[in-house]
Length: 356
Image 1 (tube, one colour):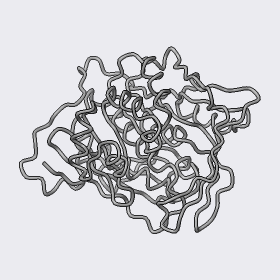
Image 2 (cartoon, rainbow, N blue to C red; image 1 turned 90 degrees about the vertical axis):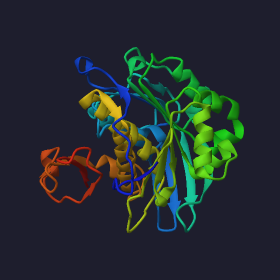
Image 3 (cartoon, helix red, strand yellow; image 1 turned 120 degrees about the vertical axis):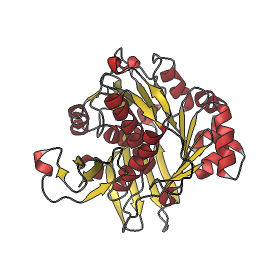
């Protein structure tokens, strides 16, 4: 069954299905554990350069997740050169930093890259692993009870170490890339077998499975373990596969792309953050919630592309349109100068939007 973001062209739509459900009596504030890099990026594009800015998969994921839940645990490693200002901001957004290792005298991961004219292809100019070399992740006592786990792009061996430390999370989402398929496929498949949702781009799905057509690739990934497969297609949107169901959502159209770095990480953070918020609000996650999460992830990713580094995400405020058109800012300072981007409403009377 194929579905689209507007909910149309869906003959015989299936009845409501619960993917993760808890009794109303057991509702609680959901927590998300985020694993990934907190780092520096230096980015060149045909339209400008960033200088040295905050980046890393976990930075983008954590900022996106913080739009939806106020209880997050970060697992990563930094050197003494990393700015305290960013850490203070994460903490203020409800992120526990007890799982963030600080290496005294060390330097943080630093990636440098240059994009081609199409703003899709890019060349890595330098990768200074620094404190990432030999790092062993440590999940704090409160973090190992997280309800949702987001495994950002990292060595599968590190991802496995984190999975071994968490206590029966409800949902585990994995984001990975072709680099690990090239050098660590065996360990990567071990991680994949232990997750509920896998997010990859179209080329990675083909490389992972050997299947060219994406529906066949998704079925092959299902057999590896994940119940749900999200295949990102950049500016062409995203596909989600689960059992015999297929959902497609277009990417949000942008007039200008400044820097696409971190867009995939932001998508993943928006996706899992929204799912956690629905579990927190209703005690369940349905297929409809999953579809909305794809739309939300796409919208969040679109903001990342409009500026270098994490700056755009750090300036966002989520608002609620209820009913549509009646804007309620989430903070006093966001009450004017709105430029909003909305997703499909989870309920007819409520639409999510972000103001920048």
